[in-house]
Image: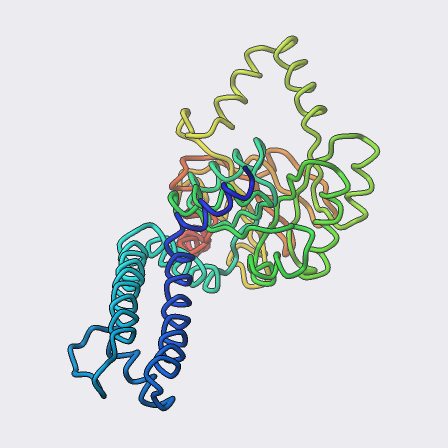
Length: 355
């Protein structure tokens, strides 16, 4: 039963069918040339020529008059050649007009897009958590690549235009194919802690500056994952327990946080962050001088210091320093705008003049 199923799949595959048809044509030409050499005593060149014009049915005349056995052999050769050629043309049409061509074109386009990606995110593992990460990154307009072991999702991803690489996320070559050397961040959401740890170690080795987030299924694994190179380790059970306690003790606060962090932004607000880098226009200016609310209608919630501490609701006179990060809240379009810090310079200048 297994052999019958295997043969059935081979015959139903147009690519494999075309390969078999081409092989049969080659064997038919060899067999025909050998047959003419034996039956009609032709030279190898004449026998090969006679076989080719017979199989292709071009209508050229016979090189020498054929005997009765030669004519019977020629008739069988013509019929076999027609059947084989028809089968080959049918398989070729199936390839050109069927799913194989479109799948090949999609794969080529995907490979070109993968090579052009920069500052994208890599999601290792397309389980329930990976699926949620993909959805939210897509809603926020970020470029991403999914790495997954299951080949069954290949066609699904192609249909949905999701960039992906099928393979083991702990393999160097697979992550390189996903563009890890040019990526901005990576999420390791594989099935177990050892696999996540190997993915983190591999990713950190290939891109030391990569921002890595992973999940841990046990408290013991959290510290190990951090030592392996993860920047943030998320424990679904700990986070879920905290949310349940919040819902129990402070239900209104819990509902507010749900609305704030809910995919789709039903409140119309979003959290954002603005890093203060060396070339930032905000470095050396106070929160008031930055004029974030006046320019983009976003409110400063806090400032993360270089040492990792966070100051909530900083004073308007608080000076922003290189290496710090501003945490803001506001409309999604405003968050996108201020994160680029492209339109803040005029506000700073106006504030200086007002002083």
